[in-house]
Image (cartoon, rainbow, N blue to C red; front, side, top):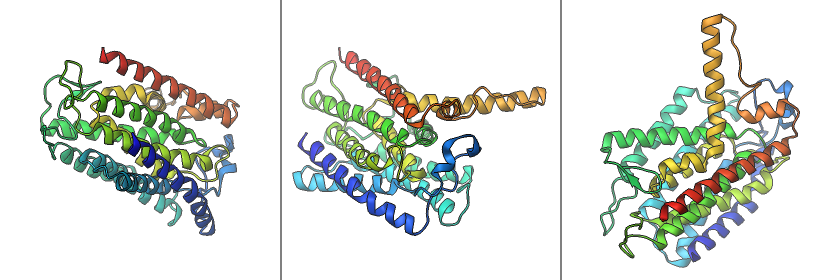
Length: 357
């Protein structure tokens, strides 16, 4: 617990103090967004023009700093699970950085093409999946298991190939889920904090009831549960520090650098704590936002094909923009969506706790 608290504090302070000079640097180089979403004349998005982006760099650097210094000060050893989750976070953040770079430095409004971004996410996801089933500890536990999991491993082993494919699908779903949610000031940051807080609790609970400590019917076979809690805490701390500047009205946006990185951190934690399907509940807000886009696109294409006149289910997607277009204040949408995210997290933690019994 000492490493969790110290690492989180270092991460939060680093992000809190480091975001201000980052804003100044990006403003001097005029690296602000030009228009946050298509059809901005229908929303308040035009008022965001010029706001610095790429703030996700601060989240990544603060998280890595908190993790390394926290372990150095407490002399707790770094673990394969913790390092791999941070690798996934940083790797996906780098893909997002390239996308942001093309948008801001090269003045290409679309950044990476969808296929190019998918290739980058795939490379990082596959490397993580392959490495995660190596590095066994003294109890022959690896950072990840080739079984599917809910609150623990279930069913038979998928085998290496199917496991890698499954992890890749989760990585794509999680990183893109946070990415589409990042459309209003502080929305994705606040929702991510709630999910990460859940993983701090889950990691600590698993560590206290690990099978390596007391073999019992309801113990957890997880390689590095305490270090998973440390990773969750440092990323959460970085998000807290960043949210000070990202809350409405935002002084800086995280960009794809931050949203892809946060999605990677969250899904990595789900994999190393054996809570893969539980993530769909803990991250319920991200699921809803993603489904709104999928439904909109599917209905649009289907009606265009059959009737020649495309129809829409929502005024605009992701879902938060529909409420924005209906006249809701941005702060109202953000706070209410945070409440929804909190309810999903509470429900997920409740199910996780009940599963113990």
